[in-house]
Length: 167
Image (cartoon, rainbow, N blue to C red):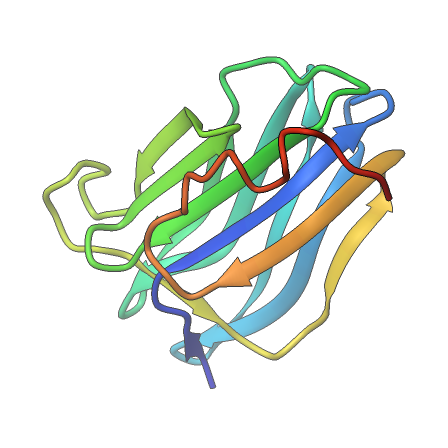
């Protein structure tokens, strides 16, 4: 059975030690059936050439049509040893995926039949329940991981007190 996710936002604070290609800090792997055909699925976020790359394999589709691979890459380079707030959001009404770092839009992609605002929206469908793996192939820090069912990321940069804090 496939699970229709609806809109979602994945957000977290990240402070990588190196940001080397191949370091993976978010991973979900599963499978689902399309018709009678089983398909491997995964969602992963990793560093590639000093940028963050999100890959969605066999997640989005409509009916028996499946977008086999959707890749979202940050436009800005990742700076090691610097905290940044990362947010990736999907709107199930428009098919829009937005990726932001510290509130700045890094990448925009429509997951529709036309890959534009128009066209049939490809919904996110997840198959067999599976665990999310956080920072299994990553050296650095991560904090405040939140996955919510909403279509827009809250852009609130004053999350922590300006006078500082400790952990």
